[in-house]
Each structure stands twice: as C-alpha cells, then as structure tokens.
Amino acid sequence: MTTMPPNATGEVAVLGCGLMGAALARTLVRHGHSVVAWNRTHERAAALASDGVVALRDVAAAADRARVVILCLNDYEATHSVLTQVDDWRGRVVINLTSGTPGEAQAAGQWFGERDVPYLDGTIFCYPEDIGGQEALLAYAGASSTWHAVRPLLESLGPAPLHVGVDVRAANILLMGGSMFYLPAMVACTEMATYLHGQGISPEFGLRVMRMFARNLVTATGEIQTAIVNGNHRSDRATIDTYAHVDQPIADELARAGQRAPVVTAAARLLSDGQAAGMGGLGPSALSDLLAEASRRGEPVVKKPVGARVSSALSSP
Ligand SMILES: NC(=O)c1ccc[n+]([C@@H]2O[C@H](COP(=O)([O-])OP(=O)(O)OC[C@H]3O[C@@H](n4cnc5c(N)ncnc54)[C@H](OP(=O)(O)O)[C@@H]3O)[C@@H](O)[C@H]2O)c1
Image 1: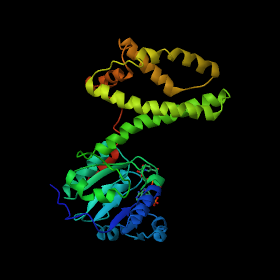
Image 2: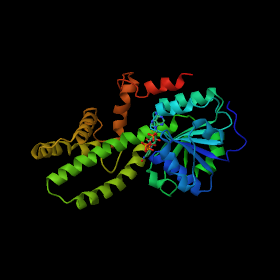
Image 3: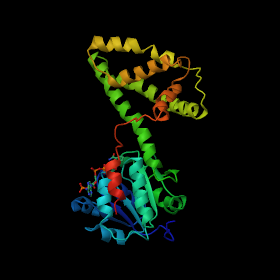
Image 4: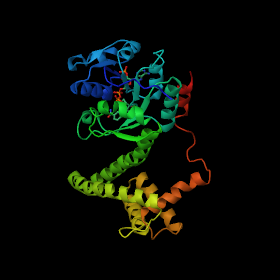
C-alpha cells in the first residue's frame, strides 16, 4: 500500500524536455501551474524559460521542489537512468508518459510500489501541438486514489484524460493495441498512395476515398469490438467472403502494376484462412478466433518479448 501525499498540488517537475516534454511543460504553465524542468541536455530545458518554466540542472533538485513529477523520455531505459538519480521519491506522485510496453509499465510500477511511491503509467496518443487542446488524448493507468489526486492537474494536458484501469500496464496495452492498427494502416496508406501515383490518379481523390474509409473504420471498430465481446460474428453488412473476393483481383492488379503491397497481401491471406476455416459467411470479427488460436494452443506468437531488456533494468535495485 503506497502512501499518498495529502494533495497533489504545488510545483510540477517535468523530466525530459524533448518535443513532447516541452509541450507538456509549456501547457502546464499556461494553466497556472508552477513548473520546474530538467533535461539531460540542459539547453532544451533552459529554452523553456521564456514560457515561464524554471530549468534546473539536476534531477534531484527538480524532484525536491515537486509534488508531482512527470517523466517524458525516449524510452524506459532512459527513464530508469533518470529515476536512479534520486535517492528517495516518496512524498510525490510520479507519472510516466514515456511510451513503452505493458511489461515495462509493470516493472516500473513494481519499482515505485517497492519504494512506497504513488505511480501512474501513461501514454500519449496525440502530437505535441495537440497537448492542452480539445483533441488531446492521454491515457493513464494505476491506483484509483492516485488518479483522483492528480486528475485536475492532468485535465490541463487534455480536457478528457482516460483512466484505463488500475492495472499499471493498461495504458501501454492500449498503446500496443492502437499501434497494431496504426502502423499497418500507415504502411497501407503508403501502399495505396504508391499505387494511385503509379497509375496517374490525383492524390486529391485518394484523400476523398480515405475520408470515407476512416469514418467507416471507426464504425467498424465499434462493431468488431462488440462482436468479439459477445461472440456473435453475424453481419448483415459485409462478410469475410465479401472481402476475400477482392483478394485475387488485387493480387492480379499488383502483378500488372509491378508493385509490392505486403499489408494488403497479409490481410488477404488471413481472410482466406477464415474462409478455409468455414467462416466465410460471418463478419470479419470472426477472424479474432483465428488470431487468438495460437495463444490458446500455447504456441509462441512472437520470438522474444520486446520489453524484456528494459523490464529487467527497471526491476534491478
Ligand atoms: N512527439 C510525439 O509526437 C509523441 C507523441 C506521442 C508520444 N510521444 C512519446 O513521448 C516520449 C518523448 O518523445 P519526444 O517526441 O519528446 O522525443 P524527443 O524529442 O526525441 O525527446 C526525447 C527526450 O528523451 C531524453 N533522453 C533520451 N535518452 C535519454 C537518456 N539516456 N537519459 C536521459 N534523457 C534521455 C532526451 O534528452 P536530450 O534532449 O538530452 O536528448 C529528450 O528529453 C516518447 O516516449 C514518445 O514515444 C511522443
């Protein structure tokens, strides 16, 4: 059981003044908070002086003045190297907005738990210029008491912060899930743009089509999530058969155009697997059963846990 400070007001320390950390520090000042900042390369913190941020050269000096400490660094390895520069973190709430894996968040949560320090692990889903604005999306995970103590402060960074769960891994799980969509979608955008450009179609038309698809994808995400939760994959809109029909024409067209498109090719392969498994008449959410199958059978789904190296660094005393 960690000891909460009586309240989480007072000075805020921002550790890490890169693109995102600088945006966090500036925004907090704009909302009336006193902000001290530290950055490994001091000039980046000092550059925030004109915004009203007090730049300090020492992590411990910044932490000493703060009731809330926000970390925003490259990765959890950098986070660990900064954390170990302070002997005793007690008396503060620490919020780590560095992106990472669920395992890294868990190791960090354990590190702070062992030191009796209230800790939230967060993830930022928007760009630095969105911070503080209506579009800002930041998610946090950790004990409800800690969340409630700092929520008013966190509302300065975005008006609707999400508390994803008391499990400290939750925000990074949301990041992993979001990335599973966003990364292939980015590559798929590039596949589309390469093809359209190669075929002499104006980018303006590609954008028009994407706007419609993006809207439909938001609806589809809601439907797919509901279907997976309920286990009901019937669809009166489009089935796996409907989507799989496009597979061969796309493959033929790519061959004609002389273009690779690995994302759509992988998607087509999964749809074919769904058909082969007798799911053709169901909605695409049914593919979830194929995706989850590996873990049910106890098969390894990835060769090596990505966060293993840093997690062990954080769990060392
Ligand atoms: N920028 C975005 O659009 C965006 C969006 C969502 C989430 N994020 C997340 O925000 C975090 C910060 O990103 P950023 O865009 O601010 O990156 P950035 O501009 O590259 O800044 C990285 C920060 O990490 C510090 N750092 C790196 N290695 C360090 C070490 N070993 N010890 C101490 N400090 C170290 C850097 O210090 P120096 O200045 O000394 O190098 C700098 O303050 C990342 O986890 C990123 O995924 C960023």
